[in-house]
Length: 501
Ligand SMILES: *Cc1c(COP(=O)(O)O)cnc(C)c1O
Image (cartoon, rainbow, N blue to C red; front, top):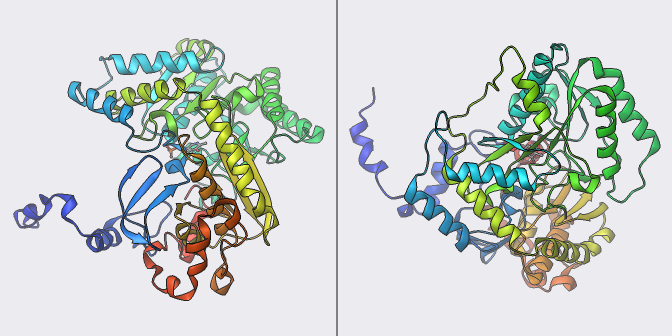
C-alpha cells in the first residue's frame, strides 16, 4: 500500500489554487474526455466560470477571455449559466437535503417534477421513472417495452427497430439503436444485440413526405412485428447521429404502423425536449403520443444530470400484470432531490417566459446569419429548425481548424463529422446570435493549412464581430494557438464521428 499520509495534505489544497498549466498537466495525465484517447492528445480550453451565455477562460485564447457559448453545453443549458433563479433553487434545496434514497422514501421535489412532466407531456404519458442520465432513461424505456411483452406472454417480441442516422446514448442497449455506421457498430459486431434498421429518413423538415419511404417504414414494421418490442427513434431531429431534420409525417407513419401491427413506440426527446425545435416536444410537430418518451439534457437547465422515462397507463398496467409485476430498475440516485428541484425551477423558468418567441427569434437570427454559408466552397447544406442551425460540408470537418476559427471570432462551437452546428441558450441576445452565426460560417470554411487565411471574410458583414480577430490570425496566431486547439488532432477528429463529441 502506498503511504497515503504523504499525499493527503496535497489533496486538501483548494482547487482554485491550481494554475492553468497545472490543470492542463493533471488533465493530460489522468482524465478521459468524451470519445477521447488516453493520454489525451488534444489540449482542451480551461473554463474558469460561466455566466449568462459566456464561458470565461482561465487564459485568453486569441485574445478572448470570454467565449459566447453556441452549444448550450450539448443542448442542456437553455437558460444560460449561473442563472439567479436556478442558483436560488439549488441553494434552497441544498439547505433541506441534497439526496436521500428513493426506495421506500419520497419527497416533494420528485413528486412535483413527475406531476409537472406528466402535465406537459403529450397525451396520457403520466407515469414517470426518474433516472440520472439520458442513456439510462433509454435503457429504462427499452426495459419497459421488453417487460411489457414478457408480461403479455410474448417474450419473443424483444428486438428493436429504428432508422439509420440516430443516436440514443452510449450504454449498451442504446448503442444498439445508434446509427450502425457512425455509431462504430463494426467495433462491436457480434457483441451488440442485432436490431432492425430502416433507412434514414429523407432530410428536410418541410419537405413533402416521400411516399416510397413511408411504405418502407410501414413494411419494415410489418415484416418484423412478430419479433419487435418497440420502435425507438428521435422525432423530427436526429441529433448526435448526424444533425438532420425530417418531416413529422414519418413520425406519424411510425405511430400508425406500430398501432396496426402491435409494436410499442418510444420517442427519444432527450435532445429535442423543452422547446428546442419550436414545440415543447418535437412529437407535437407530428401530433403523436408515443407509448414511452425519454427526456434529459435540458431537464435541469443544464445544472446537473437528470433524465426521465415517461409511459402511458397501458404500458404501466401491462408490466404490472406480469409474473414479475415490478419494473426492475432502481438507480442509486433515482429521483435525486437537488436535481428534481432544479428541474422544477428550470421548467417554471421556461414556461414563465414566451419561450416560443425566443426560440423563433434565435432561429431567425441563425437563418439570416448562416445564409452566406450556403455560398462557401465545400458547403452542401444550411438548415435551421427552432433554435438549431446546421451547416453541412462535403468533407470531414478539420475540428482543430474549425474550432480555432470560431474561437478567434469569440465563440465556442464543437463541430463533428461533416458539420458545424449551433444550438444557443434561449437567452442569447440578437447580437450574440449574429456573432455565433458568423463564427459558424468562419468554422465552416476553415481548412487545415493555408486555406485558413481570410477566415470570416464571407460572413464578416453579418456580425461585424469576426472581421478583426479572424483576419489578423495568419501564421503567428496559429503558432501560438495551442490552447485553442480544442479536440483537433486526428484522433479527436475521427473520434468525432462516433457521436456527440
Ligand atoms: C444525448 C442524448 C442521449 C444520451 O444522453 P446522456 O445524458 O448523454 O446519457 C440519448 N438520446 C439522445 C437523443 C441524445 O441527444
